[in-house]
Length: 63
Ligand SMILES: [Zn+2]
Image 1 (cartoon, rainbow, N blue to C red):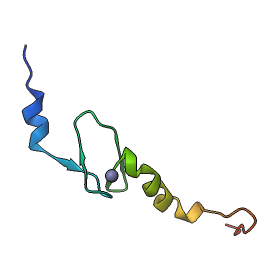
Image 2: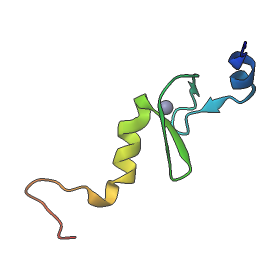
Image 3: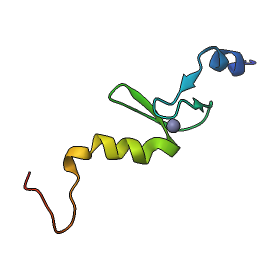
Image 4: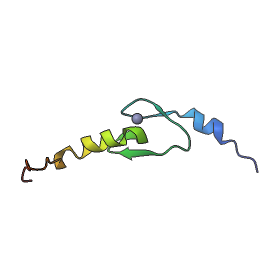
């Protein structure tokens, strides 16, 4: 049984929500709150997502 995945995957190009780069077949990405984020953008995305939890040592804001 021969499977031709390449055509099926090519049909639907997935772009990173943050940088707009194509997320290639086999590449990891994070689908979170309606965003699709590539590994390179994950840190920036996480910083946005967890902005409410951010603290600065010595200047902590009580949550
Ligand atoms: Zn990206």
